[in-house]
Image: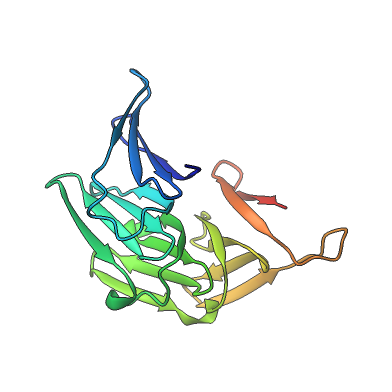
Length: 193
């Protein structure tokens, strides 16, 4: 299967999410793969992954929301539309300031999970955005790479959106696939079609 969601762990292992094959754990020193059990996952198409600072690995799926693996107690749980997500197609996961997890969906916009309060909030101004990647700058702004709407800046403090759109040489709508934050220069780098 194709590889989609990848994240490195603090112990130098690599979680590999596949399109239909579930999760593999790669040990780069021994070059061995270990399969995670498929039973905890309602959907084996894993599109995004992140290891949190508090010891969980979050896996964004194509149609079943987020499957969370708690490494400390070896257990799984799910967050989906039943728990407050506006959509279950999770394309991007990012841990920002204050241990907040920012969640980008396909067509249901941006969500934020506050680890301290355990609250999940939908940023309704972002409804209908297809978010492919998320970063946070030194000023606390959340930057979103989107499919069809280009680059979007969200200010959590002001709760305001700013769109940076363009048309490519063929007059097609802007497509952004990845985004990086250069912490040294506080610049945003964007990967586009």
